[in-house]
Image 1 (cartoon, helix red, strand yellow):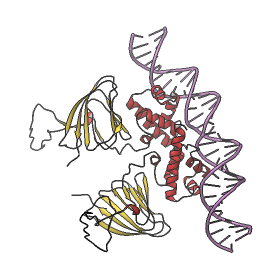
Image 2: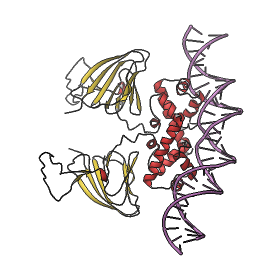
Image 3: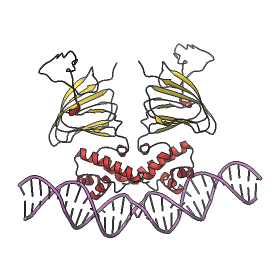
Length: 197
Length: 197
DNA sequence: GCAGACTGTTCGCTAACGCCGGACAAGGGC
DNA sequence: GCCCTTGTCCGGCGTTAGCGAACAGTCTGC
């Protein structure tokens, strides 16, 4: 196993992961990128190292850039809080005292920090609906929560998929774009936070 | 001129620019990267689109990664203040009043913002000296100023070269590494700023 | 049951081109 | 003059990226 094979398989895994998130079939992605299905398969299996042009086309077909495949996935520009990862909020009673400030309620913290001076929006995306023809930026920060459907959020070079219950936070200065990729309408709660001062 | 040629030449320009900054000859870089000199020339001239493995080797030979060639150079993680770009400081008198608070002195602002609670260091690098075997991160921010020599600063995927009079500012959370690439000792002033609070 | 439309994979095959070695002209420096 | 370096160009080899077709497996619907 030489380093070439290692990097190939790493690249293939990233491609497979990205394609799976998009729920594209191999032939579907191939058609969208203008390449053959066998090539996509070969790349994912690490049998072939694609040319830079081909990899660029594959990235473009999924709304990202070639840097996606090389940048470590650890350093994220935003923070995603998966539904299963939400922590109870308001119930953090002192275990020793056993105090319970509330009963019959359930709060879960879905944002990485507590935020103030926010603008809440209840949104509705028709099938195929999107916001931001091209990724755009502005001041402030925002936080979104998907109630139903499936929302694709482009964050710089990253692509996040939000299923019902998932939420996302990011600074608005990161180029972003939202798109409903479900075959049903997508409902969401969106929070915009203007810059402080 | 199709898009392929465009991207090739853009890639070639980035490679040429990076190689020039390192002051490597074509053969020098080729030897360091383990490729032929003609290939380096062809890539720079946009005659050939290198394979991903080759481009990775070239990037590695110059202390960066393949993402360098694809990330837009506009979005910089840090801000470089070139010697020629420094603005006079302390002499910003009101043109109308014509007041001159000082005489016989010359101050120039070399950092993007005024900083407080700092730790200043006068450093000395022997030929070939470096700091940080691998890029490292920590809290806070820092600012450096080169008095003599030539300092190579790796900032994430970026590579900056500081000649005497140049300075750099960046958050310490960006992986960084410093290296004297001059054939003489490098003197510098380095400022470390711990996180606020 | 079986047809049809999917899924992903494998197998030659070929044209393309990445990559190399060598030769070339154009400077300095001595 | 000679020598060493600079970058470029050319011919050609060898690899392989990319393709089309055929493959087996799964699921749906008739």
